[in-house]
Every structure is written in structure tokens, then in C-alpha cells.
Image (cartoon, rainbow, N blue to C red; front, side, top):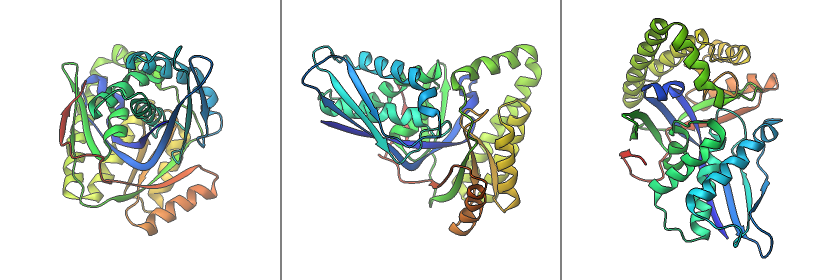
Length: 323
């Protein structure tokens, strides 16, 4: 039996625009998806038992995406499941929902489990590539950032230049508390690119002006994180959210949660992930502030995650050009 795991993630800025050349900054979070792959003595192909906790309706909504994802990864890894049928079991403490890298985590975990069970000899770069291929099932054309941070861990800046995917580490001195609040809305991530392309076509000047502002915000956020300036980090996050709201990438429920968090003292807050549903992120340094914001969310029945950014990465890779 082979086993594997993948980190969840949260994105601080930029992820919606990676395919337009804007860098994104994101962090793994210490919640994981686990996968086991066990060969079966009869049958063919694969079956899956998904024991992850979920936002109600998420797994059903993503069922066909999941099938396409597993099939694509099986093909990329060259597995003959007609001769070697398998059972895939998925579990872990990462909530299955839009905005926390749930699909990337399952892809990374599955790639690692297959690598172990079938002795494929894949290194971390290969694992990341297989997971990226798996993300096609969920995202249409995936940017690659979710699977990269799920594979490597830590805090990274990720970008694509001349069709080359790459990342570098951002060093943070200590983990910082955050709160993730779920809108209860399952977003259609695959439709995001088309939604933005419509804006680019209808008003290219405004679209490019907004991208220039976000590019500057990414630079400022990288500097603030590296220097441990959490007040500036939060300010930039909230300013970025204003642009995302203007572009229709937030949601009234997410806006409410951000406003609530900020009113309780959060340093900043914004939608995280593709947007239009899923999660929001509030920067809440210190357990006291984190609990204050999280408790207010929970009092409204909001699925809430107390976690941190800036945790220890899985390896010492400082910069990587990806497959």
C-alpha cells in the first residue's frame, strides 16, 4: 500500500491573474489531505472512498472533475490499472471546499501514494508535475500555483514567464495566525479565465490598469512579509480585495465576513482562491485576535478554520523552475 499527503493552502494575493503574468503569493497551511493506494486482487481500473470532511455539496459538485483528474494522472504516470486495479482512499483534516487548495492537495497526495505503491521513482519536481496535470480536471487550464505550494509547503511567490512556471521562497521569521471563513458557495474555478477574458476584451484599458495596481501590490506584499511588517501586509490585502470586488471576483457573503473581521481588529482581509465563493482570509496575529474573529464567524454558523501561514516547508528549495 502506498501513502501520500498534500498541504492545503491560502493565497494572499494575485492568484486570479497568474495566467496574465502577475505573480501570486501564497502559503501552505498545516492542514493536509491524505491518500492511500492499495492494489486489488480483482476487477480493473480504480475505485475511490472519499472520507474527507466537506462543505455541504462540494464533493457532489466536483464528482466529474475528480474522475477526470484521477484518470489524467493515471495516464501521465503510465499506470496500467487494467492489470493492476487499485482502491484510492482519501482522508485528512483539510476541509474539502473551494479556496483552500482541496483539489491540489488530493492530486499531490495521490501522486505520492502511486509513486510509493508502484515504485515509480518520481522526485518532488515530478510529483508536482503529475499534480499539475491532475488539476486540469478541476480548473480547465491550471496555473500551477496550488499544486506547487501543496507539494513544497512554506510561503512562496509563484509566477509564469514565457510559459515557464517558477517559484521562490519568501522567508518569514515566525508563523502568523489567520482565520479562514467559508462563504458556503462552491465556486466554478474553471469558468474564471473566461470571466476575466470578457473583462479584458470589453475594457482593456481598465483591465490593464487594475493589473498594474495588483502587480505593485504583490511587490509591496512580498517586502512587507519579508520584513515582518504585518500591519502593511494587512493593509495591502484589504486594498487588493477592493479591486477584486470591483472586478466581480468576490461575493456578498465574503464581503460581509471581511467587513466583520476588520471591525473586530483584523489587520486586513480578502477573498482567497479564485473568488466568487469559497473562502476569505483574515490576518489575525496572535491567538487572542484569531479566536475573537473566529468565534464571531462561528456564531453566524460560518465554517471556520483557525490556522497559520509561514510554516516550515517540506524541503530547502529556495528557487525552482518547474516542469
